Image 1 (cartoon, rainbow, N blue to C red):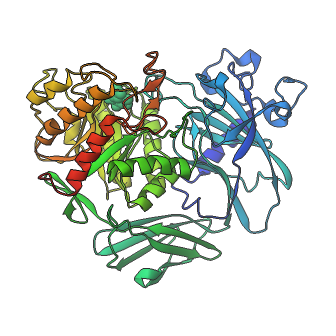
Image 2: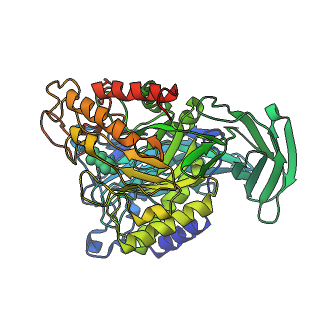
Image 3: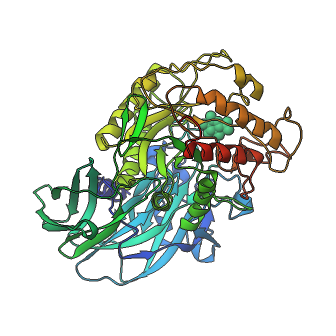
Amino acid sequence: MKRLFVTLALLLAVLPADAFALVPGRERISLNGPWNYIVDPMNTGIYKYQMQLQKPHKRYFADRHFYQDKTTLIEYDFDKAPTLSVPGDWNTQLERLYFYEGSVWYRRTLDFHPQPGKRWFLYFGAVNYQCVVGLNNTILGTHKGGFTPFWFEVTDVLEEGENSLVVWVDNTRGASEVPTLNFDWWNYGGITRDVLLVCVPEVYIQDYRLRFDGSEVAVDVVLDGGSGSVSLEIPELHIRKKACAGKDGVAHFRFRASPERWSPDTPRLYDISIQCGADAITDRVGFRTVRVEGERILLNDQPVFLRGVAVHDETIGPNPGRCRDTEDARALLEAARDLGCNFLRLAHYPHSEQMVRLAEEMGFLLWEEIPCYWNIDWSSEETYANAEKQLTELIGRDANRAATIIWSVANETPPTKERLSFLGKLIAKARELDPTRLVSAAVQKEKPDLYHPVIDDELIALTDLISFNQYLGWYDGRPADCDSVCWFVPSGKPVIISEFGGGALYGNHGSEAERFTEEYLELLYRKNLPMLEKIPALSGLCPWCLKDFRSPKRPLAGIQDDFNRKGLIDEQGRRKKAFYVMQEYYHAVEKNWIWR
Ligand code: GCB
């Protein structure tokens, strides 16, 4: 057992901490498909019976799961177990797992034939919430955080012929976790994003980071496994450069260029290729600048108004679940495009890489977020480390995406000293990891006066934008109250309304005075928009939200039935009346029919 712990510690210590450049574009074997699964609510596979009373850090994998020793755990037989689809959440694949929060073992076998001079990495797009991964007889490592990618080098662990890959997945909520015990979306468990076996040469391009300041392009290329001469090409800009990686394995490129700017109207992407020895990667990148000047957001030096909508990572359809692929993402993005959006708030956790890449191709600006949601454990160092890791993994994955303009570190967090210090550190970390983008956090009004709401959260002194959520006409007052409301928002920074809205069941018609009717929601939007327009520095809007989404906090029978009904479309994509109000408004904004 001791040996297993030592192995685990070493493996974690040598894992690359940065991004893994371009997994989607590399030579790879997909491990998606059916995986055998065993539901294990008592964690029988992870505790030995006599160890049950020990503290959680003494947990370990029962060797038996890897050795497949059927004499000791004869009931736990993967060969006889049914299958779940990967990627996919377990809750919507099996009715009996709809509410399940606990652990599930996954296993698949794979045939492997080593190739000389090649290294192999096992890559997971996301597993919610934590997991331990084992291959053959070796524990590769663990991962916590349900929405970001991670990987392990498996070159020395893969065997010729059949290999057995086992993943223990646990989506139990925890008071000190990120997110914490209480959140308003479905806690989908499982291996929810792609699993890939990625092949690279001995010396490979581990990551690259591209920046553009309006006239100069900087590209840093990080090698792993050795050093060498690196070449970079952007053919359409007639860029062909070479640079040598230094002792740190990083090659730096700096050159002037005048690319066509990426923007929602012209989402122009250029092919870029980077090559070093036997390794070569290609990508598509956009060039744009973003900054704040006074109370305006400038995209390519021009003021931009963010015609946004907030979206959860959940499919459109009769049985919605966690999005699995580009087509699931496309359905959401097409709905947002029909609404007239140029901006999305990807709430409340990192969405998939497919979503981000497709949004970029289609011309959406993005707000990306980590799940520091409501009241997490602000005093815990472990919680902070977890949040910082999720932020680091998100930025590592998407730092080269022109679409992403905002990193958001938190949503509706109660203003305490501990929270300010926690989020202050996180904001500083975001800036350190990526000084080229804006940093924000969605806050709330502090003063309970319905007609004179005030935004005075100390956090906004630390962010580039003032983003706040407000529910006038739903949680506060009635829609008509909006006529008499005057917001006090500190001046000096652009303001984004990161949430507003209310609930309605599609097809539920009635009076404007009756909650959950389409008419009530329509009125709420008609009253909110003129109220919000009066905020002088208003730079963007994000109705909450695009689509009705599952939440166990929403049980109202006949209306909610486990769905938060604040979507502008329902879970099947049908448009509520409020959709057309927002669509008409965004159309007018786009055509400059409104002063903005
Ligand atoms: C909020 C939260 C969002 C909820 C929404 C609601 O303020 O940020 O996650 O879903 O309100 O519907 O209450």
